[in-house]
Length: 311
Ligand SMILES: Cc1cc2nc3c(=O)[nH]c(=O)nc-3n(C[C@H](O)[C@H](O)[C@H](O)COP(=O)(O)O)c2cc1C
Image 1 (cartoon, helix red, strand yellow):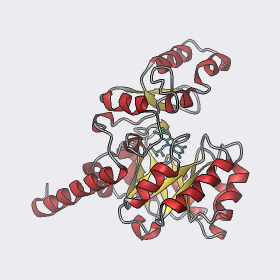
Image 2 (cartoon, rainbow, N blue to C red):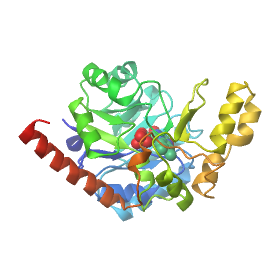
Image 3 (spheres, rainbow, N blue to C red):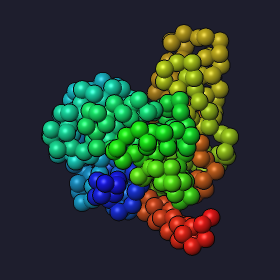
Protein backbone atom coordinates (compact mmCIF):
# COMPACT_ATOMS: atom_id res chain seq x y z
CA UNK A 1 0.00 0.00 0.00
CA UNK A 2 1.40 3.42 -0.82
CA UNK A 3 1.29 6.41 1.49
CA UNK A 4 -1.62 8.07 -0.33
CA UNK A 5 -3.80 4.98 0.06
CA UNK A 6 -2.68 4.47 3.65
CA UNK A 7 -3.50 8.04 4.68
CA UNK A 8 -6.28 8.72 2.17
CA UNK A 9 -4.58 11.82 0.77
CA UNK A 10 -4.45 13.10 -2.80
CA UNK A 11 -0.74 13.90 -3.04
CA UNK A 12 2.26 12.11 -1.47
CA UNK A 13 3.21 15.20 0.52
CA UNK A 14 3.22 15.35 4.31
CA UNK A 15 3.77 18.67 6.04
CA UNK A 16 6.43 18.10 8.69
CA UNK A 17 5.41 19.10 12.19
CA UNK A 18 7.22 22.21 13.37
CA UNK A 19 7.50 22.89 17.08
CA UNK A 20 5.96 26.20 18.20
CA UNK A 21 4.76 26.75 14.62
CA UNK A 22 2.51 24.15 13.02
CA UNK A 23 -0.91 24.88 14.38
CA UNK A 24 -4.23 24.24 12.63
CA UNK A 25 -3.65 27.32 10.44
CA UNK A 26 -0.94 25.81 8.25
CA UNK A 27 -1.95 22.18 8.88
CA UNK A 28 -5.51 22.73 7.61
CA UNK A 29 -4.24 24.64 4.56
CA UNK A 30 -2.01 21.70 3.65
CA UNK A 31 -4.75 19.13 4.23
CA UNK A 32 -7.24 21.17 2.20
CA UNK A 33 -4.69 21.33 -0.63
CA UNK A 34 -4.46 17.53 -0.79
CA UNK A 35 -1.40 16.89 1.38
CA UNK A 36 -1.31 15.76 5.00
CA UNK A 37 -1.31 18.64 7.48
CA UNK A 38 0.39 18.00 10.80
CA UNK A 39 -0.21 19.67 14.16
CA UNK A 40 2.90 19.95 16.34
CA UNK A 41 2.98 19.23 20.06
CA UNK A 42 6.53 20.56 20.58
CA UNK A 43 6.40 23.95 22.27
CA UNK A 44 2.67 23.62 23.02
CA UNK A 45 0.80 22.57 26.14
CA UNK A 46 -1.63 19.63 25.93
CA UNK A 47 -4.54 22.08 26.21
CA UNK A 48 -3.21 24.09 23.25
CA UNK A 49 -2.83 20.89 21.25
CA UNK A 50 -6.40 19.85 22.08
CA UNK A 51 -7.67 23.26 21.00
CA UNK A 52 -5.76 23.05 17.71
CA UNK A 53 -7.14 19.57 16.96
CA UNK A 54 -10.68 20.86 17.53
CA UNK A 55 -10.03 23.95 15.41
CA UNK A 56 -8.60 21.72 12.71
CA UNK A 57 -11.91 19.88 12.44
CA UNK A 58 -13.69 23.19 11.85
CA UNK A 59 -11.20 24.13 9.11
CA UNK A 60 -11.02 20.86 7.17
CA UNK A 61 -12.77 17.56 6.73
CA UNK A 62 -9.62 16.10 5.17
CA UNK A 63 -7.17 13.73 6.94
CA UNK A 64 -4.56 15.27 9.22
CA UNK A 65 -2.04 14.10 11.79
CA UNK A 66 -0.59 15.07 15.15
CA UNK A 67 3.15 14.81 15.83
CA UNK A 68 3.91 13.63 19.36
CA UNK A 69 7.34 14.62 20.60
CA UNK A 70 8.30 11.72 22.87
CA UNK A 71 10.61 13.96 24.94
CA UNK A 72 7.71 16.35 25.64
CA UNK A 73 7.34 16.84 29.39
CA UNK A 74 3.62 15.96 29.06
CA UNK A 75 4.05 12.98 26.74
CA UNK A 76 1.83 10.69 28.85
CA UNK A 77 -0.99 13.21 28.67
CA UNK A 78 -0.46 13.62 24.91
CA UNK A 79 -0.51 9.85 24.48
CA UNK A 80 -4.08 9.79 25.87
CA UNK A 81 -5.13 13.09 24.35
CA UNK A 82 -4.72 11.92 20.74
CA UNK A 83 -6.90 8.90 21.53
CA UNK A 84 -9.54 11.01 23.33
CA UNK A 85 -9.65 13.44 20.41
CA UNK A 86 -9.97 10.55 17.94
CA UNK A 87 -6.91 11.56 15.96
CA UNK A 88 -6.43 9.08 13.11
CA UNK A 89 -2.74 9.62 12.28
CA UNK A 90 0.19 10.17 14.65
CA UNK A 91 3.81 10.78 13.76
CA UNK A 92 6.29 10.59 16.61
CA UNK A 93 9.96 11.20 17.19
CA UNK A 94 12.59 12.73 19.47
CA UNK A 95 12.66 9.76 21.81
CA UNK A 96 11.88 6.05 21.95
CA UNK A 97 8.41 5.38 20.50
CA UNK A 98 8.33 1.73 21.68
CA UNK A 99 6.05 2.29 24.72
CA UNK A 100 3.48 4.18 22.61
CA UNK A 101 3.10 2.48 19.23
CA UNK A 102 1.11 -0.54 20.51
CA UNK A 103 -1.28 1.61 22.53
CA UNK A 104 -2.06 3.91 19.62
CA UNK A 105 -2.46 0.95 17.25
CA UNK A 106 -4.94 -0.71 19.67
CA UNK A 107 -6.91 2.53 19.49
CA UNK A 108 -7.11 2.51 15.72
CA UNK A 109 -4.46 5.17 15.08
CA UNK A 110 -2.08 4.93 12.14
CA UNK A 111 1.39 5.39 13.61
CA UNK A 112 4.30 6.81 11.62
CA UNK A 113 7.52 7.20 13.62
CA UNK A 114 10.28 9.51 12.42
CA UNK A 115 13.47 7.48 12.12
CA UNK A 116 17.10 8.36 11.37
CA UNK A 117 18.64 5.03 10.31
CA UNK A 118 18.00 1.45 9.22
CA UNK A 119 18.08 -0.02 12.72
CA UNK A 120 15.32 2.33 13.86
CA UNK A 121 13.26 1.59 10.73
CA UNK A 122 13.40 -2.16 11.38
CA UNK A 123 12.61 -1.64 15.06
CA UNK A 124 9.48 0.47 14.47
CA UNK A 125 8.26 -1.95 11.80
CA UNK A 126 8.60 -4.84 14.26
CA UNK A 127 6.56 -2.82 16.79
CA UNK A 128 3.69 -2.43 14.29
CA UNK A 129 4.26 1.01 12.75
CA UNK A 130 2.19 1.57 9.59
CA UNK A 131 4.92 3.54 7.82
CA UNK A 132 7.97 5.56 8.83
CA UNK A 133 9.46 8.91 7.91
CA UNK A 134 13.19 8.73 7.28
CA UNK A 135 14.55 12.19 8.01
CA UNK A 136 18.05 12.93 6.75
CA UNK A 137 20.51 15.51 8.00
CA UNK A 138 19.64 18.03 5.27
CA UNK A 139 16.49 18.75 7.29
CA UNK A 140 15.75 21.79 9.38
CA UNK A 141 15.57 21.38 13.16
CA UNK A 142 16.92 18.42 15.14
CA UNK A 143 18.77 16.04 12.87
CA UNK A 144 20.36 12.61 12.76
CA UNK A 145 23.66 11.68 11.14
CA UNK A 146 22.73 10.14 7.79
CA UNK A 147 21.77 12.11 4.71
CA UNK A 148 18.45 11.61 2.96
CA UNK A 149 19.55 10.73 -0.51
CA UNK A 150 22.52 8.59 0.54
CA UNK A 151 20.68 6.38 3.02
CA UNK A 152 17.13 6.26 1.64
CA UNK A 153 17.51 3.20 -0.66
CA UNK A 154 19.12 1.21 2.13
CA UNK A 155 16.32 2.07 4.53
CA UNK A 156 13.59 1.34 2.01
CA UNK A 157 15.22 -2.03 1.34
CA UNK A 158 15.30 -2.96 5.02
CA UNK A 159 11.54 -2.80 5.71
CA UNK A 160 8.21 -3.70 4.12
CA UNK A 161 6.28 -0.65 5.32
CA UNK A 162 6.10 2.56 3.25
CA UNK A 163 9.01 4.92 3.85
CA UNK A 164 8.47 8.68 3.53
CA UNK A 165 11.58 10.74 2.73
CA UNK A 166 12.23 13.95 4.67
CA UNK A 167 15.09 16.42 4.71
CA UNK A 168 16.11 18.37 1.65
CA UNK A 169 12.89 17.96 -0.34
CA UNK A 170 11.53 21.17 -1.84
CA UNK A 171 10.82 20.54 -5.52
CA UNK A 172 9.11 18.13 -7.90
CA UNK A 173 12.48 16.83 -9.03
CA UNK A 174 13.41 15.91 -5.46
CA UNK A 175 10.07 14.15 -4.93
CA UNK A 176 10.63 12.15 -8.09
CA UNK A 177 14.21 11.35 -7.01
CA UNK A 178 12.97 10.19 -3.61
CA UNK A 179 10.41 7.95 -5.32
CA UNK A 180 13.03 6.49 -7.64
CA UNK A 181 15.05 5.68 -4.53
CA UNK A 182 12.04 3.83 -3.17
CA UNK A 183 10.20 6.39 -1.05
CA UNK A 184 6.43 6.27 -0.99
CA UNK A 185 6.13 10.01 -0.46
CA UNK A 186 7.87 12.96 1.11
CA UNK A 187 7.64 15.12 4.20
CA UNK A 188 8.52 18.79 3.82
CA UNK A 189 9.07 21.20 6.68
CA UNK A 190 11.17 24.17 5.60
CA UNK A 191 9.25 24.53 2.32
CA UNK A 192 6.12 25.31 4.32
CA UNK A 193 7.84 27.81 6.61
CA UNK A 194 7.29 30.44 3.93
CA UNK A 195 3.64 29.54 3.32
CA UNK A 196 1.20 32.40 3.78
CA UNK A 197 -0.68 30.45 6.45
CA UNK A 198 2.36 29.58 8.57
CA UNK A 199 2.14 31.56 11.81
CA UNK A 200 5.67 32.87 12.11
CA UNK A 201 6.77 36.51 12.17
CA UNK A 202 7.27 38.09 8.73
CA UNK A 203 10.97 38.72 9.54
CA UNK A 204 11.36 34.94 9.93
CA UNK A 205 9.99 34.32 6.43
CA UNK A 206 11.98 37.20 4.95
CA UNK A 207 15.23 35.88 6.47
CA UNK A 208 14.60 32.51 4.80
CA UNK A 209 13.76 34.04 1.43
CA UNK A 210 16.85 36.25 1.54
CA UNK A 211 19.13 33.36 2.49
CA UNK A 212 21.18 31.35 0.01
CA UNK A 213 22.44 27.79 -0.27
CA UNK A 214 25.27 27.96 2.30
CA UNK A 215 23.34 29.84 4.95
CA UNK A 216 22.37 26.99 7.26
CA UNK A 217 24.62 25.59 9.94
CA UNK A 218 24.41 22.78 12.48
CA UNK A 219 24.85 23.71 16.14
CA UNK A 220 25.21 21.20 18.96
CA UNK A 221 27.47 19.01 16.82
CA UNK A 222 29.35 17.62 19.80
CA UNK A 223 26.21 16.88 21.82
CA UNK A 224 23.30 14.47 21.45
CA UNK A 225 20.93 16.98 19.83
CA UNK A 226 22.42 18.71 16.77
CA UNK A 227 20.13 21.31 15.21
CA UNK A 228 20.19 22.77 11.69
CA UNK A 229 19.37 26.50 11.68
CA UNK A 230 19.81 29.61 9.63
CA UNK A 231 23.22 31.18 10.40
CA UNK A 232 22.97 34.32 12.52
CA UNK A 233 24.50 35.91 15.62
CA UNK A 234 22.87 33.24 17.79
CA UNK A 235 24.42 30.30 15.88
CA UNK A 236 27.82 32.08 15.80
CA UNK A 237 27.64 32.46 19.57
CA UNK A 238 26.50 28.87 20.20
CA UNK A 239 29.30 27.48 18.03
CA UNK A 240 31.85 29.71 19.76
CA UNK A 241 30.66 28.42 23.15
CA UNK A 242 30.75 24.86 21.88
CA UNK A 243 34.32 25.21 20.61
CA UNK A 244 35.54 26.56 23.91
CA UNK A 245 33.69 23.82 25.83
CA UNK A 246 31.36 26.17 27.71
CA UNK A 247 29.00 24.85 30.39
CA UNK A 248 25.26 24.28 30.03
CA UNK A 249 24.37 27.53 31.82
CA UNK A 250 26.23 29.58 29.27
CA UNK A 251 24.40 27.87 26.39
CA UNK A 252 21.09 28.28 28.12
CA UNK A 253 21.64 32.01 28.45
CA UNK A 254 21.36 32.26 24.66
CA UNK A 255 19.37 29.18 23.67
CA UNK A 256 16.44 29.21 26.10
CA UNK A 257 13.52 31.06 24.57
CA UNK A 258 15.38 31.62 21.29
CA UNK A 259 12.80 29.81 19.14
CA UNK A 260 9.95 32.02 20.32
CA UNK A 261 12.20 35.06 19.90
CA UNK A 262 12.36 34.23 16.18
CA UNK A 263 8.84 32.87 15.68
CA UNK A 264 6.89 35.48 17.64
CA UNK A 265 9.14 38.54 18.01
CA UNK A 266 10.77 38.28 14.57
CA UNK A 267 14.30 38.55 15.95
CA UNK A 268 16.13 36.93 13.06
CA UNK A 269 19.53 37.75 14.54
CA UNK A 270 19.31 36.33 18.06
CA UNK A 271 16.30 34.05 17.55
CA UNK A 272 16.61 30.44 16.45
CA UNK A 273 15.41 29.99 12.88
CA UNK A 274 15.46 26.25 12.30
CA UNK A 275 15.63 25.52 8.59
CA UNK A 276 16.82 22.90 6.13
CA UNK A 277 19.45 23.10 3.43
CA UNK A 278 17.28 24.02 0.46
CA UNK A 279 17.07 27.75 1.05
CA UNK A 280 17.65 28.58 -2.61
CA UNK A 281 14.21 27.15 -3.35
CA UNK A 282 12.45 29.60 -1.06
CA UNK A 283 11.84 32.65 -3.22
CA UNK A 284 8.44 34.00 -2.22
CA UNK A 285 5.57 33.71 0.20
CA UNK A 286 2.77 31.65 -1.33
CA UNK A 287 -0.30 29.86 -0.05
CA UNK A 288 0.14 26.21 0.89
CA UNK A 289 -2.27 25.41 -1.94
CA UNK A 290 -0.04 27.18 -4.49
CA UNK A 291 3.07 25.51 -3.11
CA UNK A 292 1.53 22.04 -3.42
CA UNK A 293 -0.22 22.62 -6.74
CA UNK A 294 2.86 24.14 -8.39
CA UNK A 295 5.04 21.29 -7.20
CA UNK A 296 2.55 18.67 -8.40
CA UNK A 297 2.09 20.39 -11.77
CA UNK A 298 5.85 20.38 -12.27
CA UNK A 299 5.94 16.77 -11.06
CA UNK A 300 3.38 15.70 -13.69
CA UNK A 301 5.27 17.50 -16.45
CA UNK A 302 8.54 16.00 -15.29
CA UNK A 303 7.28 12.43 -15.04
CA UNK A 304 5.49 12.68 -18.42
CA UNK A 305 8.69 13.96 -19.99
CA UNK A 306 10.71 11.25 -18.28
CA UNK A 307 8.39 8.49 -19.45
CA UNK A 308 8.56 9.77 -23.02
CA UNK A 309 12.29 10.50 -23.16
CA UNK A 310 13.89 8.54 -20.36
CA UNK A 311 15.84 11.50 -18.99
C1 LIG B 1 11.24 24.98 12.42
C2 LIG B 1 11.19 23.48 12.45
C3 LIG B 1 10.64 22.83 13.55
C4 LIG B 1 10.54 21.44 13.56
N1 LIG B 1 9.92 20.81 14.62
C5 LIG B 1 9.70 19.46 14.58
C6 LIG B 1 8.94 18.81 15.58
O1 LIG B 1 8.43 19.43 16.53
N2 LIG B 1 8.75 17.47 15.48
C7 LIG B 1 9.26 16.74 14.43
O2 LIG B 1 9.07 15.51 14.38
N3 LIG B 1 9.99 17.33 13.46
C8 LIG B 1 10.19 18.67 13.50
N4 LIG B 1 10.87 19.29 12.48
C9 LIG B 1 11.25 18.49 11.28
C10 LIG B 1 10.15 18.55 10.20
O3 LIG B 1 8.97 17.97 10.65
C11 LIG B 1 10.58 17.89 8.89
O4 LIG B 1 10.81 16.52 9.06
C12 LIG B 1 11.83 18.54 8.31
O5 LIG B 1 11.66 19.94 8.28
C13 LIG B 1 12.09 18.02 6.90
O6 LIG B 1 13.22 18.60 6.33
P1 LIG B 1 13.20 19.99 5.50
O7 LIG B 1 13.23 21.04 6.53
O8 LIG B 1 14.44 19.93 4.67
O9 LIG B 1 11.95 19.97 4.69
C14 LIG B 1 11.02 20.68 12.46
C15 LIG B 1 11.59 21.33 11.36
C16 LIG B 1 11.67 22.74 11.35
C17 LIG B 1 12.26 23.40 10.13
